[in-house]
Image 1: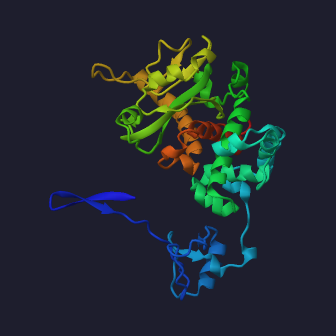
Image 2 (image 1 turned 90 degrees about the horizontal axis):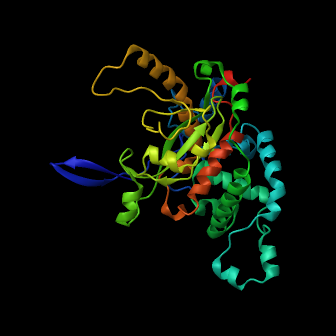
Length: 383
């Protein structure tokens, strides 16, 4: 990580180092900088448990801050609770197993990614054997893949956690990205107008004809060395090289549309045109968009869009009220996008080494949000 500082009217490059974590227990010198095998834990929010921790730390007049940590050397093995579905962002263990039962029958027909040299020299029998997992069980490979999405850690670190080689972890990630892209992508997530009406929240009573709420999102990526590629993926909105996609949400919360990833230089209108959503729309379906979507002549039906000033004239009072009501409803698609980006892989700069599978990874993460999370608004749970 790097930053800049101004010194004597000159721009000086300054390296910013990541702060290491230290154990707050007296006479304990453990630090995350030199002990990668030790985990560091913050104080719990529950006040009774927090008070017990403070007593066991044995420091006078000690008030833990948000950066105070206790290393794993001061805990016993029975003190740790394993909640694997929490790491994968599933609501419960039953939700995780429901997804596994959905995809398990197709794992026997999974096409695995192998090295080119091995593929060229392997016989038919060896290729049949290669289609089966030899190191990890299929459910463990799914666990590895969901860990990769959720934590965004490096493939080398995943290999260390699962006791496999880094290249093996890379092939498992690519294999499952392609596999889930095909299996989950074959399930139709686009909803009929009848299903939308049956689950319409009361907040949408003034916009009952809304079929989908769409918005664009951008993922920051590593800057390519080619100037031509830089011009294609550079986003003036983010001032960074990005991948850009469009996401659609039904009024009651579930994701119903996700486009492929494009270069960050593409406009919202062009992305709407290339996304493939237009053939799904009919004249009786309305679309709710942000004011940056100039797609009036592309949508066959009605377009709900916040108003904006033209020719420096003040907006009418009716337009102001309509803009506020649309903005209150359209904000939910941004919350859905935030759920997808809670996967740390998409919340950091994406390396170009995974650009070949980033489209599959992003699409799978978007579709998995329908299986992992509850409703966006608690009051919509009954709809």
